[in-house]
Length: 634
Image (tube, rainbow, N blue to C red; front, side, top):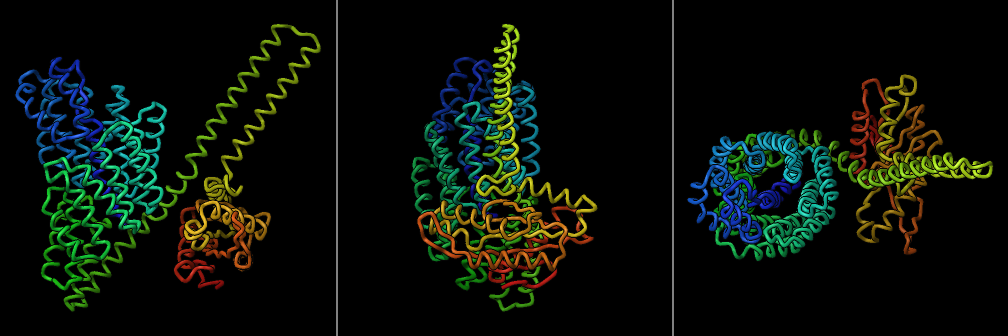
């Protein structure tokens, strides 16, 4: 389910980048009258891309006959408009024609736009490596030609490509930098575009509330600009996140709203994503009687291959449920054939799901040995994918959420400190020039001391912000992971220590039932219990959300387990009073890893403790497990 979300969010990305650069002409490059006409079509393309294509077709002969500069912009604009309504084969033809002309004109902006569109087309064809190559080249050329707007648009699209590869750390960092620059430049469009990308990334990471919030921000930006096509894309993203959140009626409401916004279009290909969204939602609701006709409608409409593969998989599942096994086999083979044409998707969650469906089909045919073999193959590949991406995904997500706002505060405090330093220096120069007597000198010294004190307080606050979690006052994940690396590299300190990952059980229910202030109060109370229960020499940190990391240096395993067992019991017995006066009881689950000779880095010991935490969660929560032992406390 998680893996499909980003693929379903892809039309938002396609439309945004096509629309962003669609029909933006450089008047000096073309004949004046033709350039003016092309430029005036920009808003029309954002509202009705079909009308823009029709008008471009009437200009073809004029554009091609004018000169090479007019012809290059004609083909680029036609390719962009074709991409908006998912005419990908036509888009490829137009890009080939544009490339032949641009070779002769050597125009910098045209070359960057060509690379950008080639990257988007490759991305939608599932060729992610090729897509990244085009985007990387486009960014380099945009920077060389000082084309900041095109550079930022391409960086946002590159961030989305990283997301499709499960490379969330690079995706978040790349998108964050583009978002910050766009905001500083006051570029409403790129800001909304980056917020749209955030919506896709967080949706992919199952953070649906954050995903929808970012899509709503993007929607507001698009509506402010009056871009109807972008508006429909953002609404599609909102609908998709609701679907994966399990809020199917909300999803259907937004998918139908998306359809209404595109009701003016006459090309069925433009409606593919709406058909796709409704079909997949009905399938997720296990309403196969309604889903199968909707799936057939979508697969018979022009659209990207990888989306068709997802539809065929859903079709196969429904046919198996209805015991139409030959039809299920046909649909499954259609999905397998598509994935065979998309090598970049091999051994991804989307592709290996065909093994799971094939196992269910074999079971329905009473071929249990084949079903077992297929299921084993699927489980092995799924485990390998999850183990390779889980830790990196969560670390990237938590680090970015925690540090984005904090980095802004540190930046502001640093600027204030610089301003105060300049003020102090200026005061010293004024006092020196005036050659004040003893009273003047004394006053100057007092002023300087006051500024030094202010600087000291600000620097101290900056230092605290860089290592402390703002909500609890515990160490933050950046500091505690640096500490963990240091203790592992210290031969004396690293001989005997343990780490514990603790997670509040059912924390989402607390937020849902009592609100986020109640959840914050529980987090702070457990942080205080941890400090009160653990030793003074132990290092206690919050690494994100409801999750904590404890490092207990110079301690035997048995003593460590006794201490954390006391903490587990203390949380059980604690009556948590919420801000509204209501009293609730909360439990935690913990995973322990004791240092050993085979552990050489922080990533390894953290991963082992995380595995032990997973066992605690999976075995009923409210308990402690270690890598070496079964449940320590139940």
